[in-house]
Length: 369
Image (cartoon, rainbow, N blue to C red; front, side, top):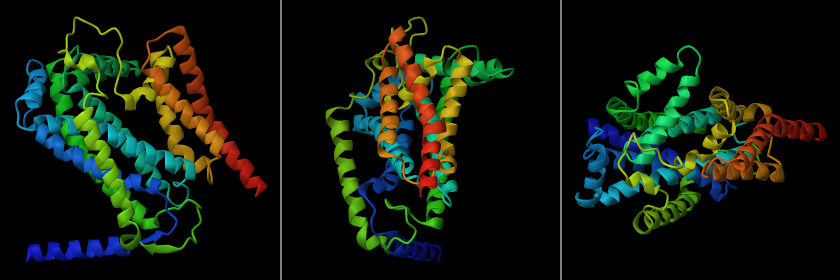
């Protein structure tokens, strides 16, 4: 009886998806949401398989990862799919966000949809960071030491909060245990938030490149299933090429050295998808103000549907995206006077765009219209 009811629910869901009214003029950039969902599912499946062989102990973690890669049948496939899948997941989510910002898809009445997306992005960043610590290589250990110590800049509770995160007075075995627990739990929270994000989308429907509510609608299943399938095939090709032919292209070589608390790497670099935020932190000498700057950056993203109306001006928007790419490049370089100055300038421009240029452009266009 229960199986019959489940089959009926699945049939109703598939009928709903197939007949879901969708604007007839969507571009391929609208594929990124569904691709992000597939990549999240892939990360959860490969993560569960990895957890079966991983040992959250500072004396065994590094060896367990090597054992999985070299000794477990097809273990290297699981590991490289999970490692490179994280990068592709961020690529898909960043492209999804960039498209939303350009077309201002989160404007009224879709503010809740957009805000839930930013919350998902923040949770992704936290999940990916604590996951990067788990292999217990040199870059993992020192990245965790540098980033978690930033919390000490919080007034009154900062130091105590850092000790709680560490489970002691330094990054050690309790830290690894806590990070492993959180890294296993948070993807399921992400999955729940993604379902809520999808429900919010279905409440108001998809936007379209022309940003008009009267756009012609077509059934999703008949017209967009093949379009999404093409996106999945392209993603699968890139995924397999990266995982089988260039598996270490996005990994740092220092992470193949077991964590050594007594030997600091010459240059600490996080994963590429953290680099713009890392550059913002580095461009501000004061640790506390740097954290506030990062919070204001994400707050600026959250405010866009409320302070900006309509499609962004292409050249101004391109300059904003270019500044983020430059910040990412600067975050991968060593700290010098030139990189620090450039980081401060591009950080300033990013804030100017979010809090001044974009709202003023929207206001000007509204008055002209």
